[in-house]
Image: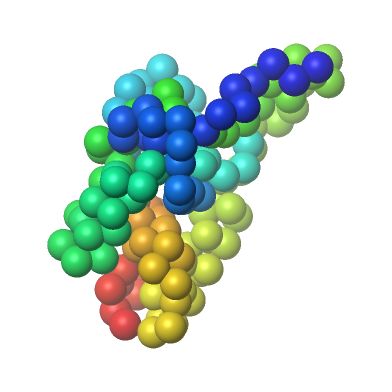
Length: 152
């Protein structure tokens, strides 16, 4: 039985008609508003945040033109993600704490490839820069690499 939320509201204003989605590593929720009660290590897979049309235009400008990370303005209550506890309740079994390093490394590598691509779609470019800047701000992006978020 699925009991989760089926709509994905805009993480900035709560509008129920999103036009864009960003997929982020679980650790990025710590940069979002109201994230204190969430144990990011218990998140399974990526975290998705959505934006309505007007907010998406603002986010694109902030990220691509100004270089600002918008996550601190996003309400984590509107993010979409799965918690390990949900799976444990469904399966009636205890699971190990997820190791997020592989997911973070994969998202970081994919994001840097997009940043290197001058023909990348704007939504992919925004997501790439948000992922790299968020992980950089959290001290993860420098582990094992020296590339900067805007080296292209």
